[in-house]
Length: 356
Image (cartoon, rainbow, N blue to C red; front, side, top):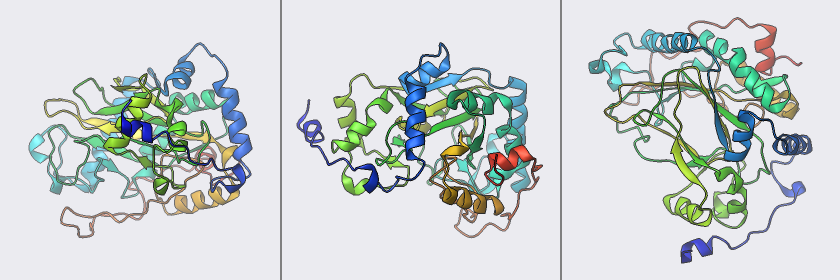
């Protein structure tokens, strides 16, 4: 073990529940539920998720449905940028793409609440997988993003060409709390854009936090911790059974991972012939949410806004204004979805706007 790795083992005091900024009246319920889930053997993908920190639920929806949702996404993009053509690489320019993040995600233009996105979230194959895992069909869902990553696309704003390992779980969290998901709408092999996971890392990340592997000044209640190159190297030296790998999928598969698992999204190789097309979806029991979190979630819903990967907590509203490549506000920005969803009781309950 290196001297640097040895230094990370210096213990920090562990906060009691009462002094933990994330402690609330739901903490005991969440920890009890997690303990029950992770102490059982199921004989299916849930065992892989618990033991490895990630899994793939094969064929959660049909390949045909996946392709239809993929076409919905491309049509949505073209409603904002008519010159974009997914089949013509010459149109893959910043001017022909809606405003997106540095990781090729789209959260603006009210896209989290487009009709196609709510239909996708309501697909039994996706929703029921989370219900099966949590043992509860009374769920909330995240208002998350879509990702469209173009092979060979170059932009100074993109950072997916380099690793950006992180966990979507605060150092103040205790144990399993959130399961994230990706609805795969296109195939992903070794050359294609996909999720990179560090298998087994979920077992050790809390210990790493509490033993000083992440400086205390980086601790924050927000559920996102970026690991520096040095921090990741130290982590891997301390825990040699952690394995980095790219998740391979087929259209219609569902990737699930524990938010404590170190991961990041990788862009396609330049010679890939597949446009990475995914939707981020995460569901949690509605019983996990406090009244304050439900009120915050409902306010975001009223504004057709986005949130984080979390469905029941960490409700940080993403109400950003869409911008053009030159930084100016995009005149094509929207204050409501192009195609409004049908707000059924089921959708309103998933959104937290109506109680079970």
